[in-house]
Length: 410
Image 1: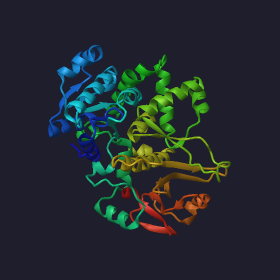
Image 2: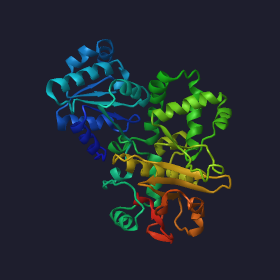
Image 3: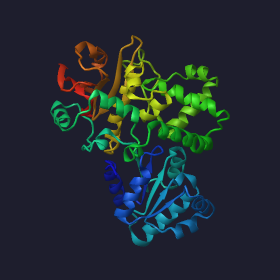
Image 4: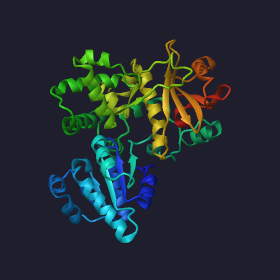
């Protein structure tokens, strides 16, 4: 099993909160990690994927919790929202009786929309919510995962430990980052993602929205995958599929809540509000799933396609996002584009400083490639170090506090 960085957060939560809720898309490794916690901390375990257990949890939640005493892991808890009130009662009772109720329950679920409703209504203040992603490159290559920083000294030290060359990068992008693909390398990506999409549509989407024409929803997913790293224009997608704009908006919301996609909002300050583009950019959480849906079957096809740049950008932004999430740090990420076509791929607001990141698939760059950075030089925030992340093998400077970094510096 690949060691997961986020395990430290979960261990801390067990020691400080009565309930730990682990959310994330299907197949990111929640159940596997919980099994490790079961062995290490002596938790009991039950999965609501089991129809009998699910029926019991729904019909008689109090009896269910008596039959499955804490400390308890409840996997796929969103299938029985009726449990939340009973969980609250058990947690409160333990606190009154013993004075301590930490480490009672670990809950997991892949449908954040239903989970969040139950948690916020029943267990506010008693639960620690941890969002889990698929594997990061650091985890796959066995490297310590730290929050990404633009710091030449630290970046040079990191790339001395491991490097990702161009061929490896495109293989990672097409393969994707779901743990099963690395636990069982004999599984083909096409087979894994075909099953993943079928399961997602049948089990998750069909429970949440009335998809009368599943072929249209499949077509929607395929079109969306080809747009990863691009601005989200609802009208264009609606016309391409032949549905209403509000339908597309509903489907986008479901995909975002299920952590299939996320939306990167445009950066905004009063001084630039009149000239910026106000649409969000769309990213798939996993490049392998996006490649499968966009029919980019192998690294050579991707490398030669018009999609190469946007998929490299998606990979880079995802890895930076994971470096924050896996270390329990909130990310304040944005992008910039104005009506003069000036663009900054990623803006990181961290500790009161703005950092600009360009995502490229080439090797050699110069000062002219970061001219858009000047658009925010009068920001109300301090301007920190910035960079181009690309396929260079070395760290070098192209302007004052602006560097070119290898992708493996993340």
